[in-house]
Length: 626
Ligand code: ADP
Ligand code: MG
Image (cartoon, rainbow, N blue to C red):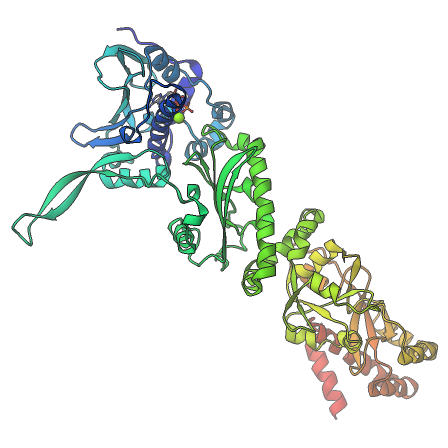
């Protein structure tokens, strides 16, 4: 009998399958099972509209059977079957395989990846089989047919005897080669594992005869093998169940079964949407940071199922970066199994789902913040940095989404507070939202720069994360209130008695400050009388956009651009030290040089900046001791 040739594009796909790499071969079973499930679906839908048909769920199943001796694996179903024409048309061409166009372009680059990630259909059988035989009897037809192919050289179709409606696919599993083991596709435990992994939530039972051991009758320590038909898949996925039937433990169990994390999730979100796009999703907000979370290795994404069949382990397009900590899965009936990565990115349905999910995560976080503050703070300790990073990234375009989720440590409350809480208790005369940056709360608490603001009774937000100041720069304002560093030039605090003093004495001291500025000319932009210092003698402030904290962070980055803050040395003219400076200015310039350097270095130390020459600094201290 003459062999018929495959269509050209099918040939190319066949080539790819045959040459695919080992690790992706296992998905052939997923593909064949989902075809079987589709075929049962078709009978089911037919029965809905055809009175002469009834659908008794018990009669519909998929069966997987391995025969080691003959090296065959059989996948049979009680689905709608195929006529001769359908066998020819459906298996002889790749009719609508959307992924093919993409595959051609990327065959060399990335081809094997696609096989693993997306539906590749019936042809994947050739990844593990030399010969594929399909026998089928279509619903409403009296004849059955046998389709057979050894791959690239075409296929045959002949009449066949088959009693029941449905399809049987027999794979003649390849012989092992030196570096490829095909035997595993005949092993019960391996087949079971593959079914569990990819097809656990297929709605029809996937049956398999498995071997068990049991004690021999009449004997306690002798065992015998016995065969038993088991249903391998769990069929109804948790996300299709009614929320009311599920307990928090059910979700926790799912979280750990899925290996989303070793911790207990802080919150689960179960979504069922039956609108323009239909989908179910279960999302989790983890409690602990995955060990690789803040590294390049961490991959965000949700599991993506198409109608119960896993098509992608981590679909990144479902989550924005700022919510990359969210774990979970999405299942939609409206996504095609045969979808390439590129198509997925442009898929309208997927975009809609992503948008919905994003909104939902935000509102759940907000309600957590409102109703379960402690839990939210726990969450924030782990992932707050990611939210702040989200405010900063993409030129601040997500700040409206995220600003109400931010928290900072408050000088007043001695705990994390939201920006809304800060602003709502601001006294009327307070112009700005004040913040101070430093390594730790303890260090910030002691910053001389904060003295005036604190004395005014204003609240200060403590910034200890690298990203804090950058994120706040992106925000610029919250509820129309500008952010202001306590080290910035103008604090917007109304003049008080000592301010008057400073102004009048400014001219008087101009010569002294000019002298000091000259001495430190390569280090500071200016030397000034301080308006903010109360008890401390000296501090550094920054003029302009770049603050001292920002300079530190930028400096620590690889290939930094040597961006520097315009530093100003501020002197407290009400401090005794200032008198010594004045005296030295009049009597002993040598001493003034010494004092100036000492004060400058002290200011650096307070800021947590490195002293240029520590040896000189300690020598200078010794000089004033003797
Ligand atoms: P897809 O499933 O995306 O359509 P496949 O290559 O997996 O692509 O299958 C091609 C076609 O072959 C299916 O659309 C279906 O019409 C037919 N087919 C495959 N397996 C079966 C089966 N077990 N029962 C009935 N029809 C099948
Ligand atoms: Mg298919």
